[in-house]
Length: 470
Image (cartoon, rainbow, N blue to C red; front, side):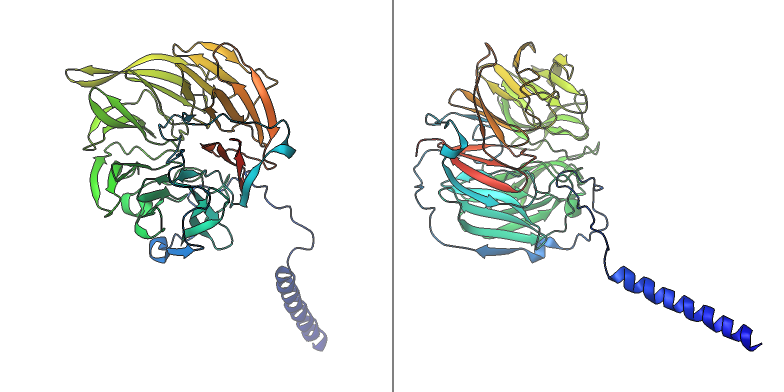
């Protein structure tokens, strides 16, 4: 009897010791190293449901680093990049001085380089101030930063807490900046409007909370627009598009969204047609043109729709719009027609992705030709009828990197930070120079070029190069 009792006590004691040992072992951490997630290769679910959203708007704050105007960059110096794709929304620099590309990286003049949180958000520039939407991974906050174009010194930063998991980068939009205001759209659809010079908060919106926006896969990629003192946004929730007065934060007009078209990564492009200013947008359910003065839908079509559309519409002129996308979509040219019953949409042609499509970057219209990188990663030139005039070939590929045109040349950046300079001509593919300008990876953020100063970024840093000869 005593033996049986002793055996039961021994078993109970052993069980207790096992539980204690298990708890201590779990608290001690891993006994072998765990391989970290590789930046840019995460596959986190959209929405980050495990992370509380919180009230970011009430906790926003401004941090002032230094006062005064940007050194060595007077207000009258030419050059402006006020929003996505530059002053004319076409990624073509028209006021650039002759650009000097050094023969090797060692002779490249680097004006400044700064670290950034993971992402692809690029720079807007006005009056020697650089505006970039960053993510502060240490403090778990979006950070709209204002820097000096001359030396990269920070004037101020505006932050608000947002918990974001790594999911192919975090921040990926450009702010829009006017003489008075700067407007930014954060990864989780927070909109902030500040005084451009001081960084003083004017108003904020939470598009998910206030307008039922569905957070896009891989976070928000739509770049906001400022026209006539109004911020133009496409929430894609209860409201398809809207205009907000930058000074007061009051909504000027709203476009109804009865078909529940969702927000995409594409950005709104202005267009003039039939005597009216309109905003063209690739929403999740189709393509739409909205009146700039009233928000009225002037036309729409479901002939072009990609739920995760990334490239923006290219306004060709004479009522034509060129559209391109990934996911085996290819590309399309449409024609708007001003008919008695309203504006009608005609498809001029469609191209298969092997002819031309675009996974990420928006093609460039330059001197009546289209230039872009298609899904096989080749740089190609098309005429406006959709004929391929040249392709860079399998030996010259560029991944998902950005490109712009300046000084008669195409500047195209590949995934690993090599910059290739190509003559912008429809006659043939004529590369001129190659230069390694970044040493990171996922160099996907759009390029900014202001008065010979080229701003580029990789996943975790931003650099400003002097290509204008000082």
